Length: 585
Image 1: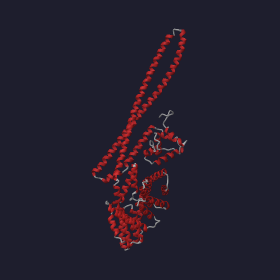
Image 2: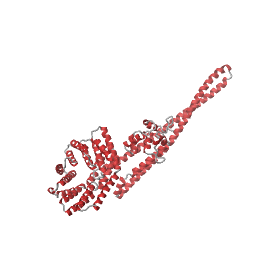
Image 3: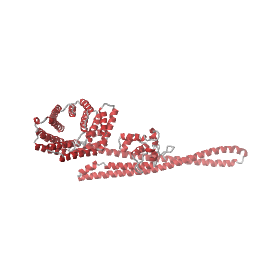
Image 4: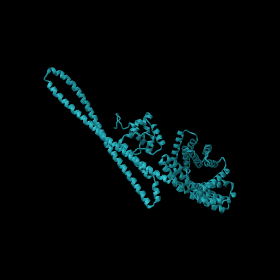
């Protein structure tokens, strides 16, 4: 099922589409690659089980030396892009066994295997000497393609690593000659012919022809994962030559996915993809992909790839430095915002106090007016004629004053409530500012401890332990776990009935409950962020460290559980914890 999904995505990627469709296809492939990398241990385990089975078959099932030679060949093929040292041992054993059998063709096959793996680990001149010792006229037809491939690869690698232009031109000319020889011995309908032809077109600056040919071949043939990885990488090279970065990125993704699924450790696609992501600003993925590529190159002992990756080490360090710098900037901005909010709160409190003093002064003046009216009423009691008229006026004035007094009392009550609410908010601000400062100090202390640990390892020259420490993701995982626990506690302190109120908006059978009291799960955190006013899925995805697609899926899934109008669910969530007046309760 997973392979079928990948084939559908690849078919979409290789047919013409609008810019929006290509971006969506790239996002799907990126999510697919993240998923495959997260399951990398499963593929490596499957590879190891396959190798164990082949070793067992070599030990228990072979009947004669020829069957043993074939079994060693199968082990060599499996080790070739997985572990260069083991592949070299298999080729040595093959060569010794072929000499024992006395079969010249088997000896030539074993020599080509040995030269091929020596080429992989950077022993170019030794490999070339071994291949040059093979008389071309003695080669059987079935080994000619292998012979030409080994020569072409050797001269191509030498052309890539020589310094002077004259030698480079010499090796490139030999590479072209053996590439042409390969085209003469391979079936025009085979994947090898298509790859060699596309490589030739790319080298001779005809990338559009290479793209048309390979896209047609991929669409019309059922390729294995390994074949798909090579075809997609060759396509990415062609797209790079015409500066089509979107399609170059898409084909690198396809190649990297196939490399990861076939559990090879000698590859280029993931490294080149990491370089593209770094240029696009996706530092987290670029660092993760480069770390995987470095680790695989070291484990496979592919010295050619290790040399290429050495050039990327400054960029890996730069990614780390830029990430720490960005985190520092975010922390500084957050402190500035909190400080500014505190100043605004103090100003508001000062303003409210000033207004309350004015109201108190007004109330005092009203009381003084009431006293004067009472005195006047006492003096007017002596005159009967004037008493009635004055009494009527006093009654009217008294009614108005009573209304005004009632209104003032109501205003006073509301002001008292506002003052109480402001006092509560001030207390909450003090608590959460203290919590934030404690958390920041803990984080700074952790970074200092981490710095000291690195410095200690550097001073002690313990490079292996230093690499292990730098590669470990435990620090980030622990920090994220602590951060989310703090977020859950703080949010539930602000909105203690959030989980119950949120579930009241859902169908009874679709209620979402956290596994542990006082915490939130992923779905509840997404809608907690929406309650706090963070409605942009991209920001939510970055906060929770999920892909944008995953956040969209969660939001859609929860909206489908809504008791009433699905479109209004998030608006209702935004009202949780507010009274009828729209204020926090």
